[in-house]
Image (cartoon, rainbow, N blue to C red; front, side, top):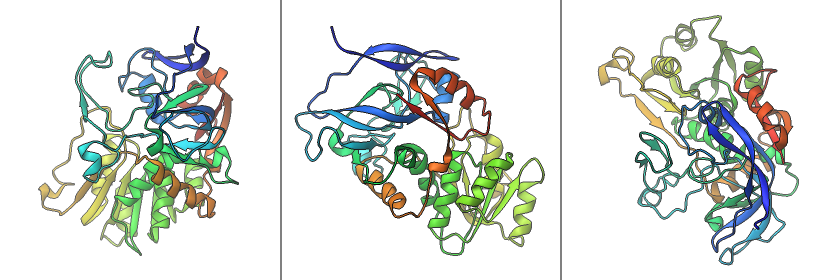
Length: 365
C-alpha cells in the first residue's frame, strides 16, 4: 500500500477540504519536494468560488518552499535534503511559445471542455500546480521537469522571505517590467494586495520616481509606502482619475498597473494614462472586459495594453532571490498570518474574507 500524505483538495465550488492522498511516485525528470511552507493565493480563492474551473479532487496551491525528498534519476545538479523553491508556473520550456520568447506559455493555451472534468475553456499556459496537476497545499509536491524548475534557496533567507518568489513577487515584478518604466516615470498601481504591493516595489527598483498606490484599505496603503509608493490614494475618499490628472499637471501617468482583475480598476487604469502610455494588466478576470471608447481614444491614443503570466523557471527564481539576498527588498512583512496545514480550511475562510488585516498566510505542514 502506498505511503499517504495530507493535502487540501478542491471538492466543489465553496469547498476546499483536507484529504489523504498517496505520496506521488517520482519519475526520472521529477523531484519530490517536502513542503515546509506554502501559502494561499487570490487565484486559489477564484478556484474555491468556482470562478476558475479545476478537476474535483485536485490538490490546490502553487507556491512551494521546501526540501528535496527524492530526485528523479535524470535530474542533475541537486541533492536530496537541499532547500528549494519552484515557480508557480513550471513549464518544460519545450513548447513553441516558450522557445519563441514567452517561457511561461507552455503547450496549449486553451483546454477543451471535459479534459479536466471542467466545462468550457480555460487558460493553462505553463501553470500546472493546482491547475492541471496536484499542487502545493500538501505535505509533498511532485515538481515536474525539475532540472528546469528547481531553484536552491540562498543561505540566510528564511521560508517567509522567499515565499513570495514563486508567484506574488514574480507576477508583481513582471507587471512593472511590462509597464515600460523609465527613469523618472510616474506609475499608478491599482490595488495594493500582495501582487500590487510587489508591482509597487518593482516600479521603484526600475526607476520610477512618482509611484501612486491606489486601494480602498488604508492599512495596505501604509504598507505600499514602505515598499516604494510616494503617494497613496484611497478610492473611497477621492476620484482617483481626477486626482492622478491633477498630480501630473493634466499629462496623465506614463504607466498604470492593474493588479486586481475588475472592470472598474481596468477602466480606471486606462483613463489615467497619458497618450502613448502603457497599461500593464495583471488581474485574473472572471468575466468579459469592455474597453470604453473615450478612455481608449477610439483606438487613436497610441496606448499599449500588455498582459502577463507569472514567469517561472529556475533562472527567474534565482534572480528574484538575489534581490532579497542583496537586501533590496524584504517581503517577509507581507506574511501576516501562519496556520498549520491541518487548519487550512480556517485559513481559507480568513483569507477569502480578508479579515484581520491579512495579506498572505504562511501554511506550515
